Image 1 (spheres, one colour):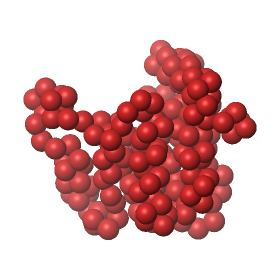
Image 2 (spheres, rainbow, N blue to C red):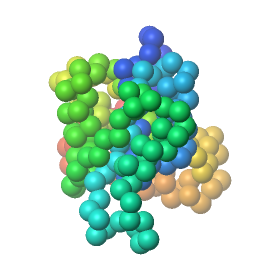
Image 3 (cartoon, helix red, strand yellow):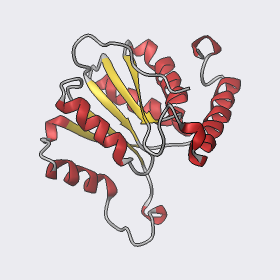
Image 4 (tube, rainbow, N blue to C red):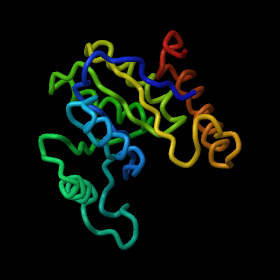
Length: 185
């Protein structure tokens, strides 16, 4: 349920790190590894737009600016990363992917490593793959497991819950036609 990238010749143009309103530390760590090892030329951190009225209590700063500042404090130059804040609507993964791929197409990106949390990767990869075909962008999936591993997820309550939740969402996306059945392997 969590596909992993095949071999990519050379470095990908970008590593796209999928977030929601926030970005997971494990996903960022994996992105930093891909960047430092030369497997990606730069990183794009994807965050969903949240209005100030919906920010967590006692968190008044702009989160995307905080992410930029933290990446700079780790020694990254601005040219090594982009924090992309996308507007979302339902279905969230689909609208987020559209926003990201529009940006990648404008930047003439041809190859992207897609980093996403564990079992969410299957649905996310299939959505990105479908939407990127007409743009001639090749997507390679990289699943990030933080709370449990791909080999022991069934021994953890969160693993079972995440698997079941993502399986239902994948079936929903396929039933609604957001992911063509021919891609659902």
